Image (cartoon, rainbow, N blue to C red; front, side, top):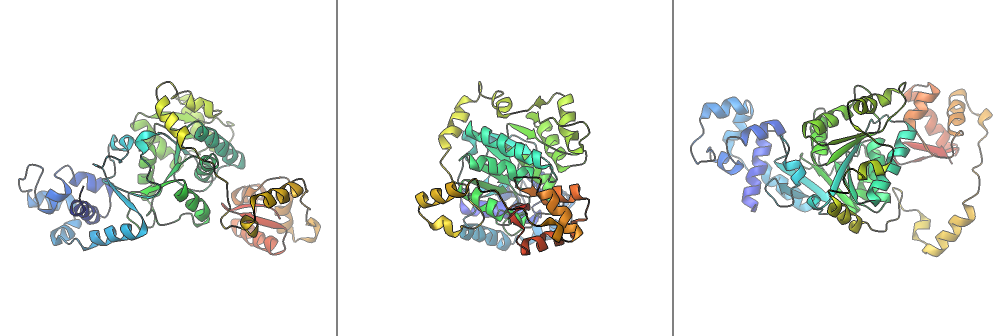
Amino acid sequence: MDERGLIKCLWLNSVCGHSPELIGSCLKLGTAESLFEGKAFDGSLIDEKTLKKLLGHAYTEYKKKDLGEAEKIFEQCAKGGIRIMHISDPEYPDMLKNTDLPPHILYAKGENIDLNRYLTVSVVGTRYASTEGVEFTKKLCFDMAKSGVVVVSGMARRIDSAAHLGALDAGQMTVAVLAGGVDIVYPPENDGLYRRILECGMIVSERPPGWEGKGGYYQERNRIIAGLSYGSVVVEGPKRSGTSITIKYTQEYNRDIFAVPGKPTDKNAYIPNNLIKDGAITTLSAEDVIGEYSDYYGELLDNGIAAIREVQAFDDEPSAADQEPRRDRSLKRDSSAHKPKAKPDINSCPPKERKILEYICKFDRSVHIDDIIRETGLSSSDVSSALVMLQLKGYIAQSAGNLYSLA
């Protein structure tokens, strides 16, 4: 599509407030270019009453025929390295196109990945997942990515973040679908993850740059996550969870559903356990997912394997050691690898700090702030304040994703 045609599409999206449902209804009458002229597909004039009834308050904006906002979005994308994919473009994902309400326009940042060449699987779960669920997700996605799967998720806290990290650590591409613009990092603590995805993956959204994700945007985002994927894996999710929205779309699109079983008494096991009861594929490892596709989509998996590259995981900011020669860094790492972490003097701390330290000391890995709140029984504000004090004292350290460990 040429530039003028694309700007007319951006104009229609802007008139509709970037509402996917309203855009979809308008496109049943005509193309964006024909609607700009007030005409249907066949060139006949569209009745003004029909447009008023359809557009409601947006009809006033429609009548202005002002391309200014559309041109502004186009320029923003050009300056920000953001690609605009129209649904008619060859690189527009076929899996998404073949859904009930595909985005008219997709904004993409990062690598220019033709998803039609790869096997895409979404991995979803609650933002309040257990530490065990997060670790399982990262391992699952690492193994799937090594087998050629391109993991799709929403870059949210916990399960989504672990899904992307697992794929990235395997050297594989990953796709993050955002509720807001592709230039907006949310949650903010995922800035490091966001930058990693830009280097080895793609971030997409149906909202233009600068738009914050809010309210119903997340449910609309979930239909894209499901639509981009051959199947969806659910790791953890309570009864009322955004995860159920993604699965609802997965079912509507007649895509595969995989579920990781959990304890019947665990509220986060509600969605996956019920899905298994209803016929979802029980998932204990990556082999349970790959086995469903290897016979029919071997070529897509081979393409994914060919795309794997050697990567080295990094933190949000490079440390001084990152600037040293690799050999020196290896020696330093080896010499300190088995040094035990010195435990702080717990008894010298106030009660709330002591309670948190006692919990963190149980683990030789990082724990999430949600786990700390849940297991200590302290309020979120008390935990946040105590964690700040413990960091100032040098007892604990924070890493990306609201994870805490002994310093």
